[in-house]
Length: 588
Image (cartoon, rainbow, N blue to C red; front, side, top):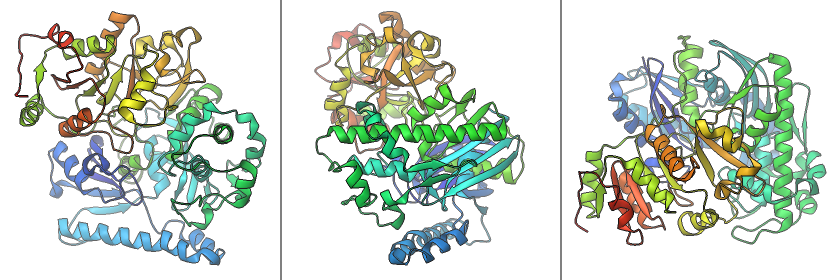
């Protein structure tokens, strides 16, 4: 059985291929069309997934789409009827948009398969079933509490339930506009960031402020009832009217501005009250989700939690769930936002609807395109670059990192999800105190306050970090041990925290070996890891993407497959000393 999973209705369009219950390939459309958070139909991603799986369109048995436009239709219509003043925006957002998306899908389908009756069966899966239940079916747990939290999906904003084997039980939902995702989008806009995309910036800004300054006021906005449903005081907001205008603070009501002060214009200086408001909203979000977790634990008595949806990418919140909730651990799959609903829809279909036995655990995020040394060398030669080839590329990388060089690291199949996890990463030595500022200013071209994440081999986790569980997808923030904060200053945030990735050799041997070899040289088996891109662009996908990013930033060297490309500022001695017998130089 071959299932094509799709997310294409809103943002982060994605495709995946599942064969006999195994995830064979998954890739975001943005990585191929180079339009970050793209909303375009993922045709390039579909074709790439089929190529990776060595399949073609006639092999597809089912298509699972992570949206069901008719779901909760009565609730939508009731809302529209009670908001006549903004009915035009409502109709455009909920019905015109939906019609256009559906029309394009069936046009594509007919173009590929001939007609609606000739191709594979299409299943429209409710959005939140593609989130938490879909994530549960690929989690390592046979039984777990389930929580989906996002801005809105078919009017639902939170979804609570329990998974047991192949069965899923729903406990309840919250509905738009009572949304923790929209609550956080509002403060993101207040801080001068782009809603729906830059919430991670707000999370990174929050530790710069004092949550107590505005916490009591923010607590008035959110309440959680005994069933875990979210209730907002909408007098603070305007997002419920669906008048989205990126040039105005359309999410915020006059009351919000009176209480919390003047918003920050994009690109303007941060004031203390911006940071204090971010800190308060972050803290109240965490407290609210912990309250929901307590209710879920009481209802399920489960040992584990599966959480999904855009809000589940708030890794500071996830860290508090691990430390403070009654759950032993939390599974957040690597693409936990809307991109991952392509995978969730496919598995909700395979396990939940078709009732196939669960036979796959999604612990390997490296499910994208891989490029061979032969393909890479052909591109390097075609670009007339100077490069060298090495058998022990990890030793070369570790030597460069030891000396303080910043490298682009391009290895193996691409990751799925928003975090670079060692396949398309920029790496540096976290022991250099100025490394964070250098990368932010010379390479990433982003706000100076934004932190970078550490990757550590799993054996070193407890030597540097206060985290009892593993964090293979970099989605759980923990504290850096106090005596190690001065040892790895460039990955320690202002509050002593870090968004850790734990690395096992069996999952990514080369990435593990680089970190281990660096540890053997320096005593610190930890690297600074950030995504291989610059601000505003998707993570690099191909060798050409990597080369373009390398030469448009302050990176010192590019390590791609078994090859090293370096700039004149990098001493050739470091590379020369590590060269093996096979050495090739292209024309410069």
